[in-house]
Amino acid sequence: MLPSIEEVRKIENEIRSATSSSIGERERKIAHLKINLRAGLAGFEDLLKEMRPQDRTAALLLYLERLRREAFQFHMAVQALAFKRKLSGSREAMMEQLRLHTEKCEALALLYGYTVNPPPE
Image (cartoon, rainbow, N blue to C red):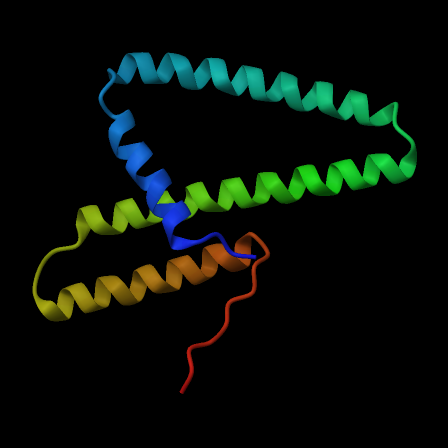
């Protein structure tokens, strides 16, 4: 199931408010978080090895589905924010930007394994 537009907008607002700290501080946090996430993932995979196969596959499936959903939400929020920040020009130029944005959003949905329904004719 695709995330709601409200979920994407919430993340978009969080991104906007997160720009209040310095770039250096954010870069240090990013490096630290990447290390933590890599270690956490390795620990999770080790824990899975100790589980019964049916429990392992159920836990891994749920984990990966949630990661995919969160990653997709953030990706869409960043795409929406980038679109809004560069939206300008004539009506025709903005319509073209909107068309390209829509194509990018549909490509993202497919990238993350979500089906995109064609608009009704």
